[in-house]
Length: 237
Image (cartoon, rainbow, N blue to C red):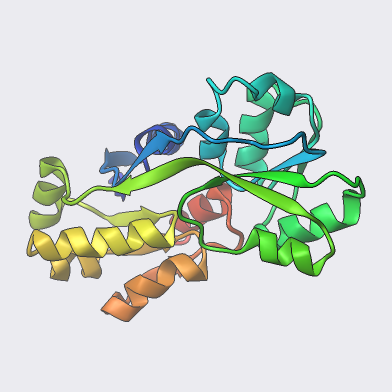
């Protein structure tokens, strides 16, 4: 029997993840718990390179008047998915840390030596402190918030029904914030018990923390903070 998984990523991210899972014969129910919107950012003076920790930032600058200027610069990204999105958007010189934010900071410190600061295209809510990590490495960086993720206050009706009737085999969690919203929505729907009882597949230990604190017992954490590693957990379950 096929697995049926709940994905709580923002719509565009969730659709890409769902397509990959469906290609593996896995059923998917999308319940986006974050809604992305672009922010009109001021990039300031010219910079020497760009740093990106989420493909959402690349989508957010699609209509920015200085987009072409940024595409001509070297870009340092956190992982493979973001690297793919950067190349698809037109960035030519893409360097990927293939890891987490600390790996990205180390990559930048090792490869970037220009006097001009980097420009970090960031979301409004950030789990880590890339600027602090780079400052410790002696690298100057300027942050431009280019998108924000707005929380959804309730599960869509189909997710409520699936949780209430036990028609889910697990949940994929890609961010700590979406995991926290998942718990809040479950409480509001009075479905916290079935919501916690499902297997939870988490991109990192940080993502898993609120679920563990709430009492979830069936938690699996990807070996690396990458979608492919997260999918690898499914074959182990």
